[in-house]
Image (cartoon, rainbow, N blue to C red; front, side):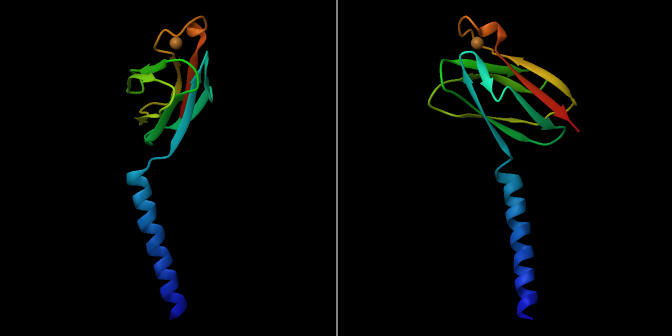
Amino acid sequence: MKRLSFLALTAAAVLVFGLAGRVLAHPSIDIVASNWKFTPGTITLHVGEPQVLRFTSSEGVHGVQSDDLGIPLTTIMPGKFVPVTVTPKKAGTYVLHCAIMCGAGHANMKLIVKVIQ
Ligand SMILES: [Cu+2]
């Protein structure tokens, strides 16, 4: 009996925290911009699964934007994280170029987003 209630409690806890986790905190990926790259430079997302991208900068002001992925123009600055929630609709490889002119390496600064099923 004791063992059964322990199991029931564990199952309830897993259910509650599992649901809360899904609702309150989508999985997140930290992405650090610098002169002139994103780290990591490639991320992988899944179709239909919300994901929080937390952007920050270790050097300079940069930006991201993607109409295809529903990412509004987002300024990335040192000292703070900017969360952007993305729910990809279509599989594919999306190349996000830095959206804010940031200097000599700006044209080559990109984040590759792979979306898979
Ligand atoms: Cu730039």
